[in-house]
Image (tube, rainbow, N blue to C red; front, side, top):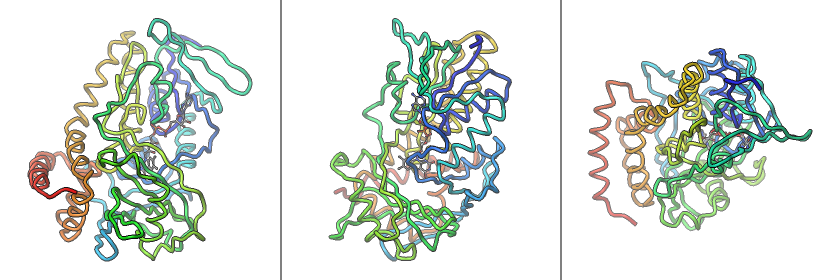
Length: 413
Ligand SMILES: Cc1cc2nc3c(=O)[nH]c(=O)nc-3n(C[C@H](O)[C@H](O)[C@H](O)COP(=O)(O)OP(=O)(O)OC[C@H]3O[C@@H](n4cnc5c(N)ncnc54)[C@H](O)[C@@H]3O)c2cc1C
């Protein structure tokens, strides 16, 4: 491989976006994906307006039949209390989202990168070769054999398990929150519904509150993505079985209009971890940089990771491009500060919020109070989906501080 080349490890949203933007700037980029497209990824398949903007910038074709357009969010607290909200208008982001299976989305975005000149190598696994703590080369293995290559810079986009990064010493901060979620596919006559739906007051068969939330995301093709999630800020989270939680949600939590049942189930629930709030570090080494779930980039407010994978991939591509252009890898070390500037305060507020909702009684109180107050919920949707406009941000911070102060006085379970 020629010098001044970039190797991207992992062909999910983060890796494909980084590869796309670097190749568009004329760099020599190889993207390594251990699976073959179309490959499954355990996910809710939901895209907010932030993700839509990034996809649009990369020339994604929203007219493909696999893409289902979403106009807003419907939230429930129990059976009767419901509020439907459309995505807000924003000066930069569109006022619509989408749902598309990750097997389709990730293949289509990888092909967009390929069109820009990225060499996409599927069914190939990358492993770091480390000498005296430094990444000296990368070993690639596939069914046909193995080879070692020497990229100038390696971008680590290997997802939440992050084996490549961990070998280089990246670690998750244990004092930061983490999410756990499971999803499965069901057939449903409501599949063309244009709303994402969430249940904020989950109960088990005895009516007891469960920590976490449930969702139904319609795919527009006769099927829906159904899932449950919870946060590590709940005291007993390690003892929660998300498959049982999912069964309880399907049996008692999801509204009847979806027609969910054992009979309409199309796939077994699959679970995964959500690494959030930039809980992983270091984010940069002498000749490598981490993005997406490998950097712990998921938004703790709502568990959304696809848009942050695209965004961190794009931001990292800027610094990698500058480092290649100037020959000074020190430029990479500006990346953590840039992430701090973009997301630091917002994610800090989220960490306080998720600590509070780790108490099921607080979560229940907030859901029941909020869903009775449309203006408050519309504002909450903007905050949680990171869709506050510039002029709303300062007000947002003040309102947030007030809410946090009130919530701290609530009784906790
Ligand atoms: C149950 C669940 C539901 C979710 N729902 C949503 C949602 O609705 N909306 C949302 O925005 N986010 C959601 N998320 C989060 C979202 O899935 C992730 O944030 C997103 O996939 C991160 O993208 P990524 O590119 O960083 O990592 P990934 O999508 O995990 O991609 C990593 C890629 O790297 C490849 N790879 C790994 N190791 C190697 C290696 N050594 N060599 C070569 N290739 C390798 C993997 O095969 C994979 O393709 C959900 C997560 C879970 C677990």
